[in-house]
Length: 295
Image (spheres, one colour):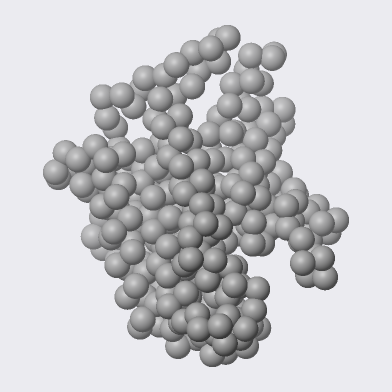
């Protein structure tokens, strides 16, 4: 009983780290610019396909291809921001959220159809010589690829935290989040800040997509599922908290795995949504967020 439960919890932590990583990008973009980009999951999907084809055609190890995937998504993010999202900057928060939702749904449909045309509806996954290898401790298996993915997710989280708290650019981003008008008066180019936050969010989605393609699989219809999970995780952890967002991903992953173990796999998604509703009702600012008046 205890060993299978421990195995499920381990799997929950490992998949939860991917939820947390995927949500980091969405949280960063929304926290800075108030763009609710519901095509976030499709950006993750593109990252997964990029690594898959780099491995399939050029034999580039998927973990080594992550920097290339990040560059690819940086370019996509730059183009999307310049052509579309930059036009929403001057709107008030409510209209910005509404319009970014509409734009995101449109982009989601476009990316899905492009992926279907190019790669069909088949699942694609990356299988390497080490894909089936694992470590074992006290009878609990730790798949190598998922452990490496957890490590990469933690590196991204720590790197993002250092960037936001220790660098001038990161401090400019935080200042813009607190009060963009005051930040502008201090000489901060808020348009550059919004652009940087957006492309970084896209790049993080691309990195998450690579890890998903290694640990699981990618297909053209996967985007909505990952966008919803990212939104749930973002609310669980608390808006504006990168560490909280990542921990929220772990909590969601463990909740889903524990539910699958005790009740059944068919209820794992329901359990995540129930947890989401409980947090919304009793702690709407999220587990690690702060109320507006407490800041």
